[in-house]
Image (spheres, one colour):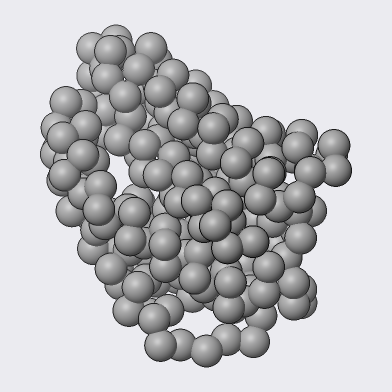
Length: 210
């Protein structure tokens, strides 16, 4: 995958996140402030604008632009955390002109590490990490078996959605929902759904364009 393809993939991610604004707000209304969808929409519209007519030299530049734009436009901790997936991934693939499965796996794993450092969350805390961590593991497992990027992303998307769905049974330990503790059980974490949507959009793009 070159930078042109990566840019197209991220624009597809933007479109899907924006399209799910109402769903994300509804999910957030159960154990949050109900505005998560608006925040996500604002951030990914800004990324759309930043990427739309821009030209880059490497995939890392695309990722860093997306990550920095999310951090600046979403505001607060969520902007830094969501932006870290892309900016951390960009740092991991600096100097690469083409992203194969191994390189793309570094985007997910390094993005996950950056999110953990910034937010202090771990798997099981009912956050977007509960979608990203199993997705990254599934991606790496598929890559280790020799699968191509398209197949690896499909595996990651499936695992990410399953991880997000599983947050229904968790008690929140991070984010605004942590104050509800046991009362947060029974509701899917909106941040994990945001991550699952991004992973599924990546897999959709790869499935049709690679």
